[in-house]
Image (tube, rainbow, N blue to C red; front, top):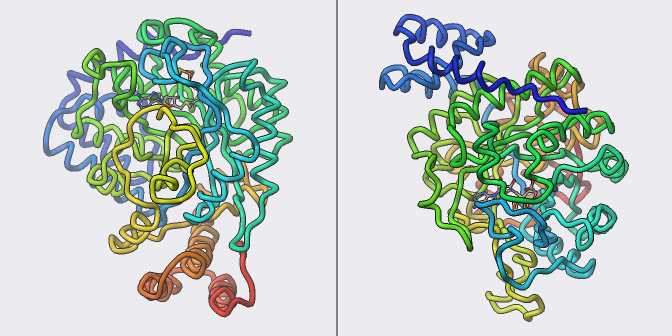
Length: 470
Ligand code: SAM
Ligand code: SF4
């Protein structure tokens, strides 16, 4: 059944009207956001359309406050794992598109294990599995086998504890299989909610069907996947239209399934083989992008926001203050890319060179990113507790909205950071981590939880235990 809940005329009229919003109404919207009230579409549109430097400064301040109030200073870490670059679609922006000539491949299970081993050596516990769309070369059974292989791997220092999946829109039956394979979040970017723009960038293949793609989360929810993660690829359509589209999509899911997006990703177009970024007329500049991130934070305070290494070191630093709660680190965006990087550093060469899906901008190592996060006052978190404890969908959201998440996420962040530092850090790194933990433990407000956290941190440090979570 087709269901297009993105009313194009409604969004366009709203954005047109918002151009004439007066100063007082924008200030009133920000006053309401500051008090934690939910903004109307009209108010959000007025924030998007304001160019007033005073308002923009306040948008950043309010978003920063919301971020601190709800997420504290925790930043969840993850990395992508590309398993196959076969693709039948012709997306004008992507190097995997079917019109691009290069030697395509998918990982064998041995190669999956080798990539995962390298990711584990970086300390990752949470992966986003990525693939192009190809029913023959990359069928759902192959994806399921990858997931099974990853979950089965156990190392001295732990294991991958959560596999999120970012594969093409598929059938309810396939989503049921992914649910049974115990995926974390099912992630899919709408790319753009503006249907004519969507049509112009998706030249052929099943992904060209806007409504099929748009209704993917409904099918995933129908199949029992209640953690879904949305996003748009900024640089394709009108970015303000796309923010409104994200909000309408979120509300549609809330209405129908009682739970909206678990996360929103904010990828921005990067150069890639086979495309010229100059051909894209809606590229988003840094200042506008920061404003958009801040407005999404204000509009959906309880939805996690994900930023990848598509952004530069400097932009990531800035956007972390405005609302981002989850970042990738040490990423490769090509099939077999981790082993390739490792072999470039002197290890035995096994993989063919990979064709990256796009160029990353932040190519620092995972540990240097994690270390700098601590220098900047953040707590890098490797927590996967909600997923493992069954706190997904509306159970997660009600916990988040009640503020209880602070008694759960902070101790989990501290315990997993301690584990990371013991497993992967040198003396200097461990000292830095210890200082962060000592400083943050008093902020665990529940006495019993705080005592338990201290006890567990001691056990991790002395080697008497690991993998604790609340
Ligand atoms: N192939 C599936 C799909 O397209 O839905 C799975 C996701 S694909 C591996 C990951 C995402 O990368 C796409 O959804 C797209 O938004 C993004 N992407 C593709 N080309 C990009 C580029 N040149 N710059 C930044 N992001 C890009
Ligand atoms: Fe294929 Fe996804 Fe790239 Fe489109 S964005 S060409 S579907 S891998």
